[in-house]
Image (cartoon, rainbow, N blue to C red):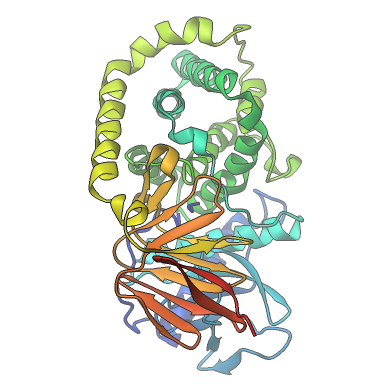
Length: 427
């Protein structure tokens, strides 16, 4: 989400061991200071609590508090341990040693802002877990269809204008955004509830970590709009759009002094709340007026952007997908997966699925790590295909060109004609 501020980070490189105990203490202190500055005004509770940073390569845990089962050991002012190899490292909330921790992966190189906001992001997910809201892998495929993307981009342009303006100009921009939103939902009505959930779960997380992690509102607004510009250029929105979309609406609510403590931070329709807060009147059918309004937001440029994207998809279909349709592959069936990826590494391939240029997945059979090359995920999120070229197996470990799998006990790679699949071991 997909992933998502965590989703906003740059690609991970080989991690050096720069994150010393001294640096960790300084970052924990900075994050605590930011949370204390908010002091629960936003959500009714100080967000600071158990937090761990994890190095992806060594899987070393550096935490600010102990766990209830004593898995973490105190040393040099922090609590350390090793995160299990079969588990995914992502910005989320987990239960480790009987304690709920916010978990944040460290970037490859030190970046003060990214480390701070990843920590606050993880802590907000712990707050959501405390409210009974569990993490979810959002994948709203209709957001990769051309029509949906057109309305989405128009809505983003209007929301950006609203955040940058005041008075009547702002009100008109909000109305335009809500008309584009309504037009999109008139075409895809059955996805509305899932969209609300995505926008609230990840969007409110983005809004919170950016606001709490900024020294002032001006810095917050700058960071938010920079993030919008970055996501705008993504090839796929299915697993990323909610992280910025909900944050933009939350920003408009915040400017009106909205009480966020009054809402459930997972399923609320943030667009409806903005409509009520700003007393916006909408037409009965948004599509009736959306077309003429779109002319004020450079719709022709958006058409060109989307046509270019479709051309690039066509080129990928011809150039790279043969690895998964014509050559021997390894097929992995997904049962209860957890994903970790960078959203800019995602390419939508229409009915064939989604191409990931780097991916970490854990499931009942173990953990897959794709570091180079591609893997193809089906649109229903039931299967992953990776190339079988260079396949090697050794007990609970399998590897090929650009990927490796650590298998859980009782699982194996089996052959089926020219390809392979993962199955429970036959005794």
